[in-house]
Figure (cartoon, rainbow, N blue to C red):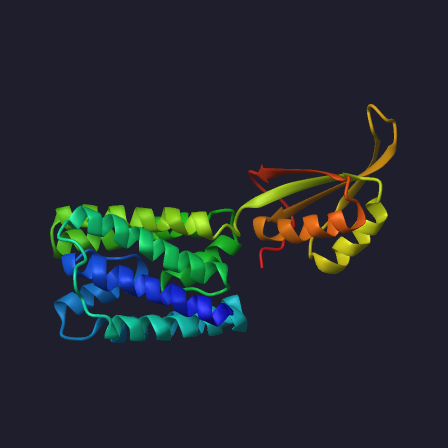
Length: 268
C-alpha cells in the first residue's frame, strides 16, 4: 500500500513538472529544480539527471533516516525519474501564472503524499526531514527556506520574472506539503476518565509516548477521576481515541496544539 501511494505521489509530481513547470522554464524545489535547470540547458533528460543527482543524498539518508524511509525514497526517485522520462513536456495552459500556481499545488500534493507514507521525493526532502527531526521547524518551511537558492539561480540564468514565478510555485508547494504532512505538529491530549489505569496500560503497550497521570474529581458529580496527559503527533490521535473509547465511552478528551516541546520527545 505504501509503495503504491509513493508511486502515485511520484506520478503527480511528474505531472506538475512536465505539464506545468518545465514548459515555462519554472524551476521546482530542491534537486528536482536543479535537474530541470540542467535539463533545459543540456541535452540530458530531466528524469535521468534527477536520478543521478539523488544518489549521494540517498546514501546519506540511509544512515540518518533508516532503511524503511530510504527504500521508499528509492522507489519514489526511480518512479519519478521514469515518469519524467515518459511523460511529454506539453503545457496544459498558455498562462504562465496558472502554470506556476497549479504546478506548485500539484507538486505539493505529490510530495505531501510521499512524506505522509514514510518516503521522500529525494534531494532536499532528505535534508529537510533530518533537520526537522532535530528541531521544531516544519518540513515545508525548511524546504521553502532552502529553496531560496533555486530562486536566485532561476533569476540569474533566465530572468527575474521567471524567478518570481518560481518563488510562487515553491511557496505553494511548501504550504500544501504542510497541509498534508502534519507529522511535525505536536498535540497535547488530556483524557478525563474513571478507567484511567486500564487506558494507561493499553496506551503504554500501543503508543510510544510518555503519560502523566493526575487524580481529580468532577466539579458537579464529585466522582473520582483520573486525568491522563500526553504529547503526541496528529497521526496518533485516532488510535488513542479508539483505545480510550474501548475502555470508557463517557471519557472526556481535550486536544489542543502544542507550540513547543522542550524535553525528550520521540520524533521518529
